[in-house]
Image 1 (cartoon, rainbow over the protein chains, first blue to last red):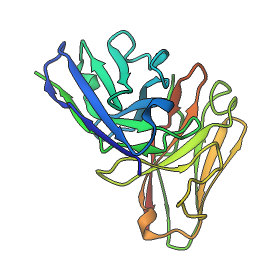
Image 2: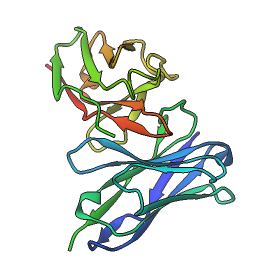
Image 3: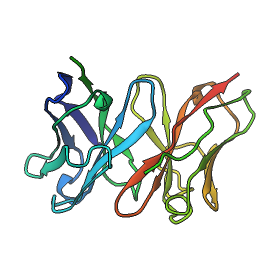
Length: 118
Length: 110
């Protein structure tokens, strides 16, 4: 059974940094692309970032490009999202998603809340 | 990376059918057969209902179906049930390994 468990969210001041983690199990993590999707309170879903199976290729939404870095540790079956220069508009629940969908997000974690506020 | 356009809300009575539209552009919905649909109940993670425009993952009821015409994709739910009340989001591959979601549609079962 695929399980994705996010952690690392919390309250951070504007301009601060945070690293999210997503522990994966139930599938061969190293074989699949993985994704981050976020949802601001009361708002819709927004794709944030993606990484290929070996971590050699990464992509970002324009809104986070240059500030966020996606990475993975296939030995630990864990996905990461390093977030720097955080802004109030980055406040959201962050979900990791994957792995089998063909340009679709077939499994989701429970999400971790990030609040950027002074 | 502009969001796809969905109606803010739709409603229907139990047993009826409803359709939710999702309008994009020739750069996303119109160019790829990779529209997916997600159901989200309050406080829960999204759930994949349709992928690749019209494919239902294992365990998803046949009451859910997807289609596309030009730059507009649609999700149809037939035989509405109370548990279908939720938010629904479309998503399209937009090229260059990027994806774009719609703004979401709140479905109310009357």
